[in-house]
Image 1 (cartoon, rainbow, N blue to C red):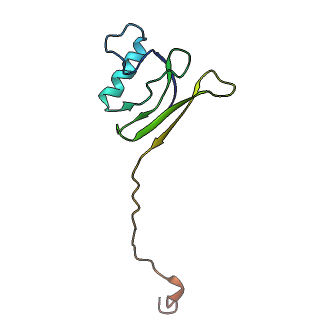
Image 2: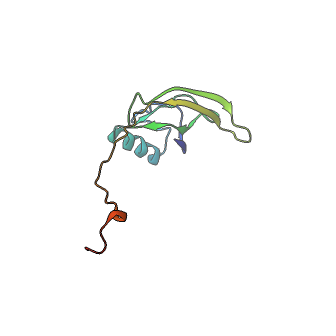
Image 3: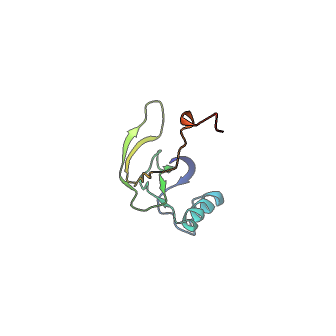
Length: 106
């Protein structure tokens, strides 16, 4: 997530749109090519979508809201909930207790 400074007027962006730069068009194509989802659909600064929230799972981000301008900034504050799964794995390995070694025999 962050301020990408591509001046999108709406999202999703139309492929042949003339209202964005070549770099912004390439950025959108890169997102599509890599199956990423951009979740922000409302303007985040004046009449443009500059701040983006991108995920690799379409249902990972939900309840995205805009809360008006951030103090001292001309960008809107965004909040969202993120769903993800964590997996805790246990590692078992043999540990030697060298304090019980028979040093004389060694």
